[in-house]
Image (cartoon, rainbow, N blue to C red; front, side, top):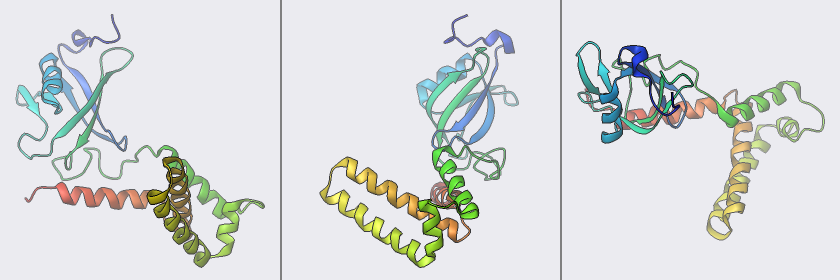
Length: 207
């Protein structure tokens, strides 16, 4: 069978659909799709399932307004499970959580998560010759000064330099900011959590 054709026969017409946040990679929910639900998802641009309890098509957010805007749909290697990437407009779960598996479910960290973990190790191990070690040993005031310097350089690059210079200065700023956070016992995930909480508050409808 073609890798591009869902094998609905395996699930008696219904296949599981795992919904993943397109930005963070967090798993948001699990639903089921039949051929009509898959077609509606593509046509509407909003994730639509076949509700086994309602016995009909159900577009996520049709009542609450917390829709899942489609990015893409992918099939697994056996053609019997969908991975749906989408942008949530609010909490996915009816409980108000951003994920049906709870807000404490770890999200994929990506490279920034790996860098944050490396900075944390540098703070503990303090290897000789490491620039990060020198920052920690310089104290919080020196680290804060570096964040200020990199912030100014980033702003100047945005106004007066090319894209490559801006990206380079922005990378320096993010790195030094992560070091300052770690020196205060915080991590990059704390910043992400704050941004997500603000976003959720801005889009959550009055209840």
